[in-house]
Image (cartoon, rainbow, N blue to C red; front, side, top):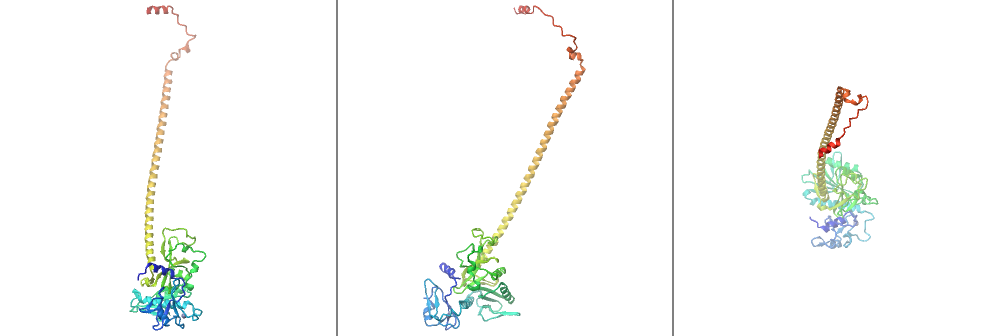
Length: 423
Ligand SMILES: [Zn+2]
């Protein structure tokens, strides 16, 4: 059945609000429990019969055993439509709402199981069929049995305290008996600690929120044990006929534990079941009628769980893509390193070659200078040798004259001769 948007929002808003008004009534004639949908106090319980007329006739009883018929149906624009007792006849002082809720929860589950497509044709039992194994027995709140009796689904609506070890023991019992067990926690009492989740110190696990989520709830050892065993905790609100799924928005690579990360908008956030060390989570409310049984997985598949599975697929895909990117990056990096290494080698080789060439040139220059020097020395030596060969008198005649050289004879008449020639 499709639910339009305003109704869906109304369900999300009204579910898990600890509604204590009575919305279930037992038909005096048939003994069946009847559910009063919200806003339908003026409507019909069956064709031609209104809730008001039925109540006025005193044929709608309070489901609490021993309590009498309801006095009236209350239709209010602001509050949820509900049944009211006669003044003074209220049993609330003696019997808490737990009894009523537990009764209606079992009735609601049995009715839903009878309509659920996977369980079509199955027999549904409330509180009356024990399951036995050689070392013990248990009686589930609701039990659905396949036509051939081979497959059984047990529903446990847990209202009282339960430790993780006790749950594991019972879960193990159903596994040994070959029974699929579905656990639904009460939307109040010890299994519903909304104040623990939203107390003064807001938890890092609740940093990211989706406005569709109905409430925040504290997680205890029991829920953490379930999460460790791969079971997502569920809650049931029989007044709103909704199932709440434990859910959280987080980046699995960096769980928001320890340092609060509420200001960090991580780009890679996924809607997933809380991690096993989370101490709080959100509850996504879905109408029970939209939930299905997954026999293979052994779980109640709420629309929220379907979304979580898709998100899990997306996460696995993203992780595989990230691994591929990382591998490609590392390959590219090693390629770059190789290129750099080769370039460095080339550079060193060129540098060494340049150095060798420089050395060679320097050597050549030194050799040249040495040979030039040698040649100069040889020439000097040759010159010296040659000088030794010439008689000293020829070389330095002046050294050998006894006195100053005689002045040359003065020639007279040199000028007139020249003048004469010019004429
Ligand atoms: Zn009553």
